[in-house]
Length: 506
Image (cartoon, rainbow, N blue to C red; front, side):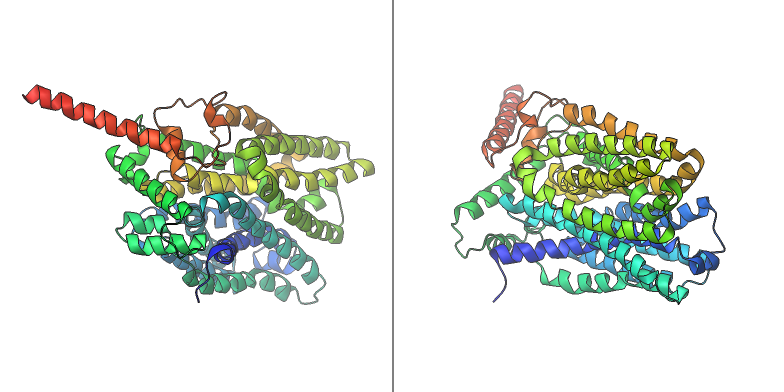
């Protein structure tokens, strides 16, 4: 008997999370690899600039992978592009593992990045469109725990391998482990259901209904939740078609009834915030920063990186517990404030250079991950998939995800040079950015927590871009009233237009 209900939701979450586990692992393994003498020798002793390039070209590949997905993924569904992306990841990991030159390694980084970019642009959409509304946020937040799991595995892998007497094995094995997670993903995805919303807009309603019933764990087509979901999907499709929001060019238009450009820009800038919060500058180089900025020994830097990964993993459970209680807006604002304070502390303690200050600095590194997990680990990925309209969700999410990878590339690229040249001043860059994010989120980002996926369309129906102090800054209650009113207004406007046209031709 096929899995359904809670068990299927859990397995779906784990499957989606495997792709993020791969991403988290890549965030961490380069931190240890850059400290291996044989790797540096094989890469012809790269400068700090080249070290940044060796790490960041992966994210540039991710950028092109996410942009590329918007041109073909909608035709193939949600699952098939993920299988294609995972195949690219496996090819890229194999090339990196077998590298005996800098150029070969760089090619492998780009190929793996193409796959990750493709996967991360589709998986949030697949997850948001498939899970039931009341489980979307909690289960969505839970899957990003695997990002931290991947990072933690990579840090401890680097620490364990540092005791190896075979240096080529030390770094090549760390790179090759990616293939294990990729193979698991290849086997898991085909066993999961396709997005019922994608099936609906591609004229396969019977299959869509069967999947919705499986996800809700019922065989009763008259189940209240199933019927509510069907009604809202049909209303959303009708509203988008009547508002002319079902072609990719409409992503760049800001009609009052849909505000698609506003939605895309909210997602694009939110991903900008994720990267300029400093997460990848720390994640990719934490062992390197412990050793060069804080002044710790090589072995202690690797050990602390491992414990930091475990701390990150525990912190990743915070959104699962509180996201439904305080909402996504407050998660983002509290997270940005905490990260700004942590970076300020890092800067001041590194400037001091005393033994006591170094202890405080290490604590700040750990606390940084707590605040990042609270605000920017899961929320942006969930948020961007939610705010985009159904017909354009995969293409729009590809654009917003590309922002994540573009700025990921920039921050990872500049970190070794900035931190080596500017020292403690380099940490002030991220301090300023994090504090600036708070008012931006407060004024412009509506709350989506507690709202069904299709009801979120009502937030962008003839509303102001400034949401502070409005009902859209508050959590919803899984109501359908807003969508019902929106559809009713559209029908009234169409009827009025038709009446005026009839009078003019009479």
